[in-house]
Image (cartoon, rainbow, N blue to C red; front, side, top):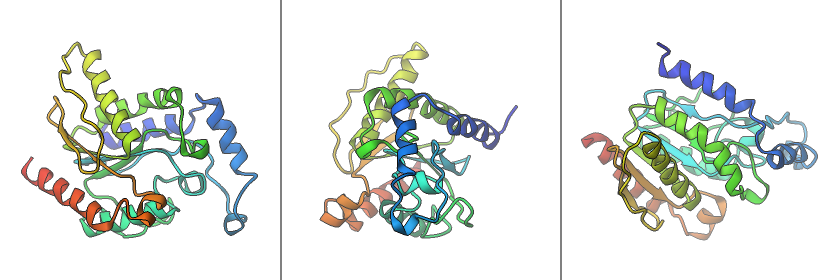
Length: 236
């Protein structure tokens, strides 16, 4: 029987080869023609970006999508942009990352007890994936939830990620002929909801540059979410 690490490797190979969304494929190719000067000499990943982290993770972090000149450039989620800097510095302080900086797929960073993925695996124009594109990518989140059997807490970064996780878990329950009687709460920072499968879904404002620079999401607000996550994982 394949190990979780092996199953994730097979799944990520499938993700990287995905071409289900013509608009996103075209946009990836267009980005290559519009590199900022600071990245002009770099080779871009320019493919769907797979999840990464600890196959035995207890925390699953779900973002929105790779940034055009972040994950789409580096090939790693939340790597190469300001939102990633904010996230990994926090993960490091709370013991989930070996380094406060995620620089490239070739660096020495190791994640502990956490796996990072996204709602959509390709960079979308204006950071706005369509409902159809979200639906196409949902199959990959379903597989990640199946493989990552130790997950206790799911942290959704932003309303779109929160709604997608909710819809995905609901779909999994219905496909198994099980009742999903929970009512979806309105998204807000720090919202917490127990799921019927025993996991806990937590919502946070996305650590985008727009949110962190304007003070919509402060470091103390983000820290409070991770403090709660640590408590849930410790007592779970």
